[in-house]
Length: 185
Image (cartoon, rainbow, N blue to C red; front, side, top):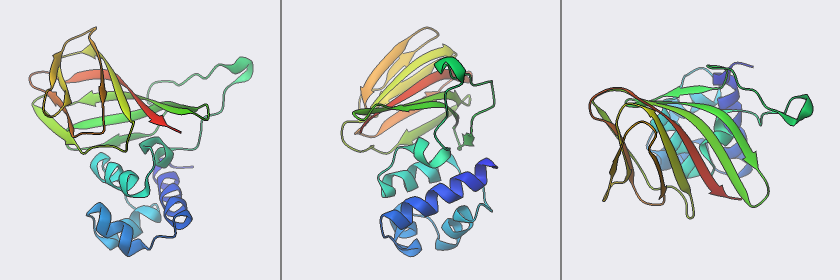
C-alpha cells in the first residue's frame, strides 16, 4: 500500500477509536478540517510538523501513524534497505521510520533523521515519559531541550527528556543522525 494511503487509514482509525470528530481533531492539531479530511482519504502528503501535531492530539507515537508494524524475516532478523521505510518531510527535517518495537512496557521507534543546512525546528513537548536519543553521523547538530540545547558532531550521542519543547538545528551543513524515540507502553 502507498505510504500516504496507509497514513490516512491509520489517522482515520486512531481518530475513530478515540471517538473524536474530524472537526475536533483538526481544531486541536491547528490544521484545517479539509486538510485532515484529505489526509485521511490518502489524497494529501502530510508534513512532519502536521503528523507530529496529529499524533499529539491522538495520544500516539508518530510511528503508529506512519506504517504498519514491520514483520521480522525468517530467523528473526529485520532488514530495512535505504529509502524502504516511510519518509516524511518537514520544513527543516526529514525522518524515515526504520523500525518499531513494543515489548508491552516500552515502545522504541528508530528513525533515520536528516536536518537541512541552516534550518531549525522546535518540536513541541511530547507526552509524559518520552525520551529521545540521537547519534550524529555527519554534520553538526544542535539539539536537546530548547532551554539548554547541546552541540553535537559526528560520533556524538545525546539522550534527553522530550516532554519539554526541544530543538533540532543544523547551523552549517546538512546533518544525518539516528533518532530513537522511547515511549512508555
